[in-house]
Amino acid sequence: MLTLNPPAVEAIRMLTGRPGLPTSSGLRIVHGDTAGGIELFITSQPAVGDQVIEIDGVRVFLHENVAAMLSGRSLGAEISEDDVVFRIQ
Image (cartoon, rainbow, N blue to C red; front, side, top):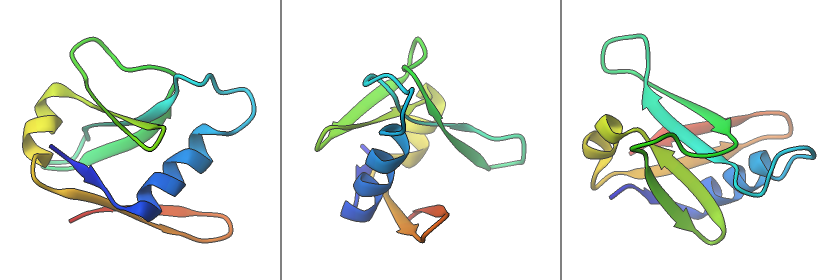
């Protein structure tokens, strides 16, 4: 299973805590358009078949194909004043 480091938890909390987003929101990770790439975005709920990870009140939705690819890995984040950069280690 994908794990989240503390900065990633804080980044997801910050992004999903924006006004107007439902409390069910989370970070969704799916296959991207490029070979081997992935995309991350905030969504209001998981899609059918997503693996849901909940840690310290934040939620991550993993597309079923991405869940296997990221098993045993960790999601980290670097937070600046106006940007968040996620990294998978």
